[in-house]
Image (cartoon, rainbow, N blue to C red; front, side):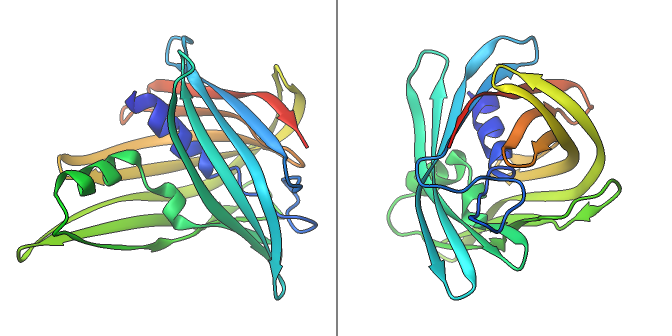
Length: 231
């Protein structure tokens, strides 16, 4: 279960879209990407489906509303949420609230009604122009829970984002020329801090084609591949 949830969060960082603005993603209402999730041994763990439900403009910005559905290996829907991506001046910016893990919301609910939650963060940005060796901006979400004079902090930091190369990747959805991006993720919970790393293959006009997640020791912990795409 934890692996499925982490994989879906990871994929959010590569699935923002913008019409006539983003070089990497088509942007039309109804455009859909399906990525199949696997554990370290290649066993199916479920899938995550992204669909554009609305496209609008505000000033010089184009705004995409994205529906995100996480489904387990038995076909049961685990989570369903909506978030926005904004494209302006050649950069797609994903709302930092999309990085919120289900465990954060569960912790908030378990603490009862007399809890104040302050959510802050930095959006996840992806520029149109990528090149090998390029460093990409960090992103983060921080949740501060306050109750009875006490406070607790949880959050996710995505750091050390780097374009490391270009590769050709073949999946059930086709063959794609991709930029390869690596990044580190630090997840702080009430029980401690977990560090992970990941690698994404990103194709122009498509988005995320493949991803791999690694544990703190650099061992493969799960992966995803693009299994269906339509626009």
